[in-house]
Amino acid sequence: MLRFPLAAALVAALALPVPAAAELLVAPTRVVLTPETRAAELVLVNKGTETAAFRIGIENRRMNPDGSLEDAPQAQDGELFADDKLRYSPRQLVLEPGARQVVRIMASAPGDLAPGEYRSHLRLMSAPVSAASAAPAAAGQQPADNSLSIELVAIRSITIPVILRVGKLEASVTMDGAALAKDAPEQLTVRLTRAGTRSTYGDLSLTPEGAKEPAWVVRGVAIYTPNTARDVIVPLPPEVRAALAGRQVRIDYTSTDAADPASAGKRLATLTARL
Image (cartoon, rainbow, N blue to C red; front, side, top):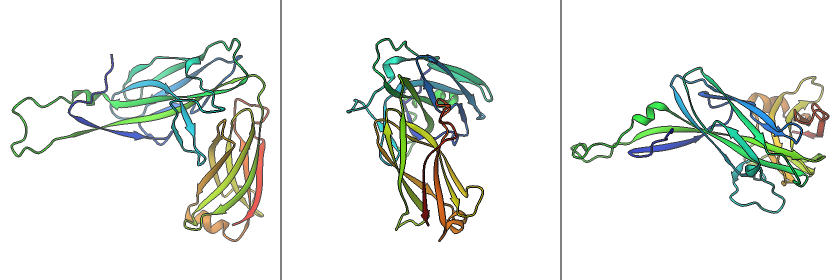
């Protein structure tokens, strides 16, 4: 059995987003299942230079109005979790540098499951195998000055949303406003409002008047059920801010939901604002 040692080590938990965690590559970064397509595969690749152990678990998370996620130990009104409807394998593994592993995910048959969107998150935790060599100091071997010796072991954590859609579900989005923050002019806040029975997923693009291509794109913006609104905080690099300043800018929210082919590439919401 793989063990992540805690004795005589202070474990630093680093929640690294995909693909920012250079040591771990996961594809895809989002899984959508249906009664017709109840199985999917994740490819896990160790891109680091050390052999690493991985432990996989499932948890329920809730989206806040600013798009951040928090633990959801209990369902609130309108929340539908998928944790008891999912199976996955393997749950523990070891990967050498450059090695890859397929993780299989399957949803149970829906049976009489009520129509709706059920969501949980698959968490992948990694730590170098060398961390297992950390052992408590033997009695009488403490430093002469009684100082405390601590080894830091990085545990990297990545979460992947797993969504089970049951029944015919629909969603619509409106863009209700966009404004630069007064105390942080390099940040643009875009308010999106969702209606319907499923989440949305897409890219947010900023195109100045007269330009053919967007000056800036934020990819993978989701609004999960049961949330009806999200404030998307868009950091603008100085050169982008300068290119947009004082100009009419078209802001588009375009679907990139591969699980909804009819909407893929469709503009879900748009707004023109002077920045």
